[in-house]
Length: 424
Image (cartoon, rainbow, N blue to C red; front, side, top):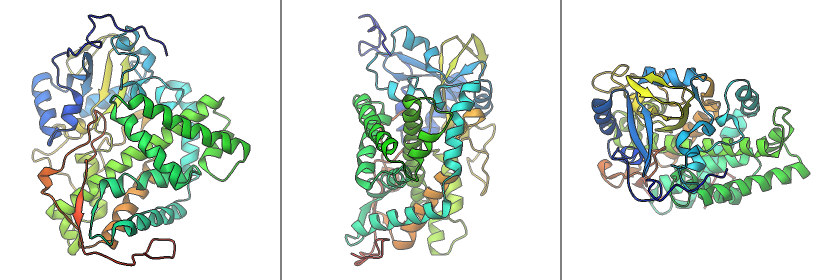
């Protein structure tokens, strides 16, 4: 994708901003809902925000408005080649936004029949996952990670656990070993951060997966990589690679966030912390509440207006970019109680999006998350957060809301089961 450099006066070339709230600041604040409330007071249910200096976007914060744009692909396209600011050079070709927002030859950037063609390999791949075997594999990964720090009596549940479990679990489904999974993880963290190293992280991420595809083409195996290679809907190597990129990346950062937020609730919210000592609300309740309060993707890129239209009282121009404000929409006062509470069992949230592009991997994502949370609570039942809950900080990203760390203390456990029949 070759775009001319923006002219010297363009905001994308300098440090000038639009004067709008940077989306990453809202996501990374201690209280995103407060930031969304301020935006809602100023703009209504659809607010103008800044993605990076000089690059504006519409943040769709209304629950009903978000359903509108996810269900009307004839007006709001997923194809980033319709993004006016990208085509006009406002977005620099080396922008950290592009690994998450630029068009790729996969289901994310497609509409209509093309979307359905590219979606089928993902649905078929998810359907072939053996849930029982996967749960045992995830339990083994979790137990081995815990065994690595259990003797210390302290750990960081984000960087030593929640960040690693999804990638090693997902990588194994595609036939990658743990070393390759960790290498993928480092590249992915850079990719989703949408910062200066985003594009280099994206390149390395794709290189690792391309090597795996070549290996499976020479020697097929019983894994999802081979399943994508064999699927008749994927026409060439580019589509095979990009489908693999989507499945691995989407299944990692989001599950990392879900595990982290569920553990944070279990450790800090009296309603859930009491469950560790026989209380009423359990892990499944915490999983659902985490999806309402801190969805794995706080904001989802993107839709692109195919014509001038109106949404939430705002005039949307052809080529405008719209961000799905999942976190904000889950807190929309039109659908949430005034006190912001969540009724146990209520799954009307939009954490998995909606419409044709709804997440295809909700079942395995919940399986991995639930297993990870249950395993660490079982093996380290007395762990406690070692910092005040208010001091939890957040990784910088306009899209995901993942804690920088969740440091915990617990009784040291020697000779912990590693999950492979041995002990340490």
